[in-house]
Length: 201
Image 1: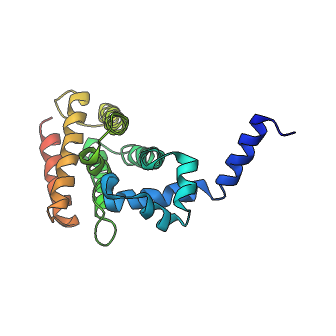
Image 2: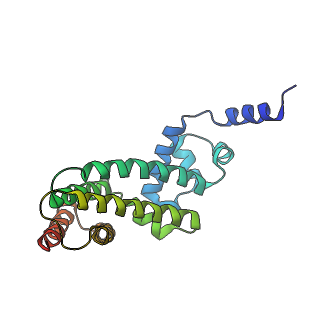
Image 3: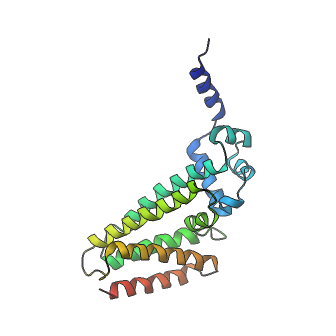
């Protein structure tokens, strides 16, 4: 006779007849294009090829799928941001970081925008808000560490305080992108911002 634990394992195995990493990556693309609020379980089912019932059984609800996808995005994004901020003087590190941000939000046809800013505006639950706050907090720490360890001249402002200003500026770039500013214009704005910060040294 099958035990309760074995039965649950068999039930779970029966539900998850799909590649979870691939599903989460596809779901992330749906949320990025449509936003958490407007994306539906049917959208996710159509994009992933997994029936809505199976998605509900495997994850519970749309928000749970989003949180799984957002966590994957955060890990990948922070790794890329860390690489961009790892080498060069303060100006070079910041410029590479902004280049990453701008390419990220202007990719796609039409451009997909900034996932984090869109999520912050769509966030209806404490769990989603905490995820966004967590990402922005970790990004501040990453930038602060990069600025404090950069060789050569540095801005006169405390690196951690400056890091928050940098993160705040990225939110402004995201809004400008949604307002129709192209990649070239955004890079010009970021370049001017970097010049001002480094010029304060």
